[in-house]
Length: 88
Image (tube, rainbow, N blue to C red; front, side):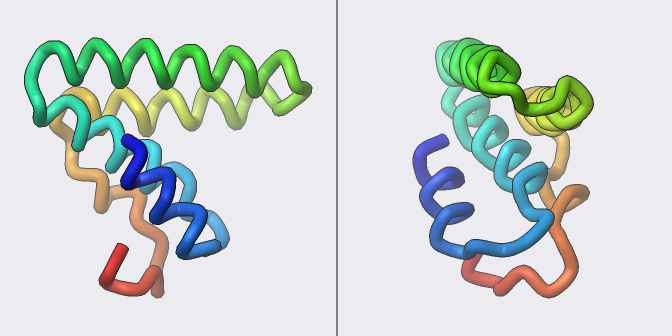
């Protein structure tokens, strides 16, 4: 998950957060049930904090859909924005 977060910050690419949410969760889940569990706990905690800081519930729900997609084996590229450089 850290690599996806770091890549998201490094890319500074507009409208890419859902891709990186899905990718981070997919990476963690690929490490087994423990990774999948950790991804869920981290993702839920992050979204809870974001909501308490005043970020919209709609955006949080969209983030969670991307998180679940990645955790459940979905292809993160579904959320990949057009033009995002290939190194990400």
